[in-house]
Image (cartoon, rainbow, N blue to C red):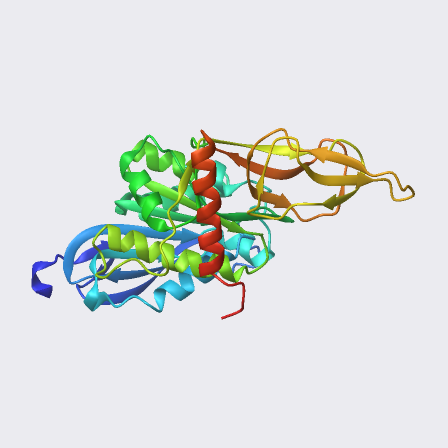
Length: 343
């Protein structure tokens, strides 16, 4: 059977059917001439199928996706695989070393695609990743977390008008799918240009492990692989039926001072509900912040101080009350299925 599958070529390497191959692609050098590589693990199956690229840490401080990739690689047997799986746990190797979202010149790698051979560091790294890895993929799962000091409810961001990408999003099993157009210079924008369906998984906080988010991410990628018929078997874990939110908005602090939150990540809120209070560090008068929306809290600031206008809560909004009820149930099922413990 292995003979029916062609040898897979990546970065000048040959990967035979039914094997795993580790590939280090020279990317750049540090100031002390130490080489920096893009490290990809390739699992080439024994049956024909898609080529799925799973990548993490395009923002170097977003660590949950790195652990998702590490755990995923321990579960894949190329002798039981149809198609090819390419896993890149750390795309922004510079930011990862520095525990920073950005590259050394403070550029955001996810605004540098498709890049160029002769541009700045971010542009060159984006070009290398695009030409060597992205263009070899038929499908992509891009793993992210919230920014520093912000936590995200596990969610999939996708252009819901792309039917193939939406099918991937629905199979993943996160409680919320957020309709989201790609930003210029992002990996999503490049994938759209190339006609490659991509979903973006957002979960947890930068520089922290969120074990529920990690468990859900590992199972979610496997669910996508089963939907693509790369793996056999049913979807893992208790089925979470995601609900599509067509928009989200940040609720901002209305005054300066300490922030006392009244709601949690994943909680359903109603229009007019008091979701936080602010107070002067020397004062006693509490100033309420009321939600202008019905929705579910999918992002939250973890810093208990804020200036007027700072973003505090990201709220996903749904088309009608029925969708809202379904989304609430989906979050409850997800919370029950994934415990927050270090296993």
